[in-house]
Length: 210
Ligand SMILES: CSC[C@@H](O)[C@@H](O)C(=O)COP(=O)(O)O
Ligand SMILES: [Zn+2]
Image (cartoon, rainbow, N blue to C red):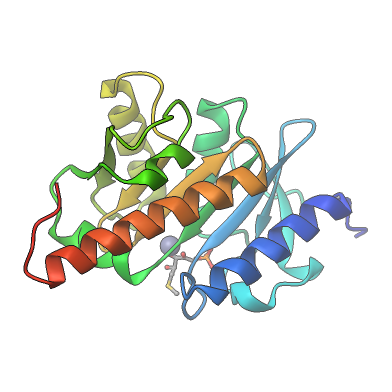
């Protein structure tokens, strides 16, 4: 079957995988990456591939409900979470998911949210133009039942003041971050991971972090 995914989308996904792997955010075969395509299609990583070594063969197309165009290929196990983000946020064109040490450790000891306050890097988030701000990053309980987890995500979004932050954490698992293009999604991911690493370092030093 010919690969009908635009070259630019494949390139963006491969490069994102390399960039996330360089930072140790996608150990083993963890993580998944997607790009919205025209016509209610999504290009997404296939399940079980190492994100440092992606090639065009590791990328496939699904519809906005996660149905593969080629039923012989298995998309990411978490395709339902990507598609849920694209359905909820029509301006979103890229979604990235990583498993860093900081997002895993901090989400395991958090309640419903992780507060990030006073960091210059908050300005990477849409609508924030000063460090004198605070955000509450949602933390959802992990669940291997992805439709049920997506329902919990949607219930949380419904309770959040609009506009929802373009990110959430899954407890002991990882982070989902999205944006209007891959560069924006990766910048938001890097900013959030930096702040989470700072928070973890502050706590490790025996201090607190607001
Ligand atoms: C290596 S375990 C990680 C997986 O269970 C999952 O959380 C993950 O991020 C990658 O799954 P995948 O199906 O390859 O997209
Ligand atoms: Zn994962």
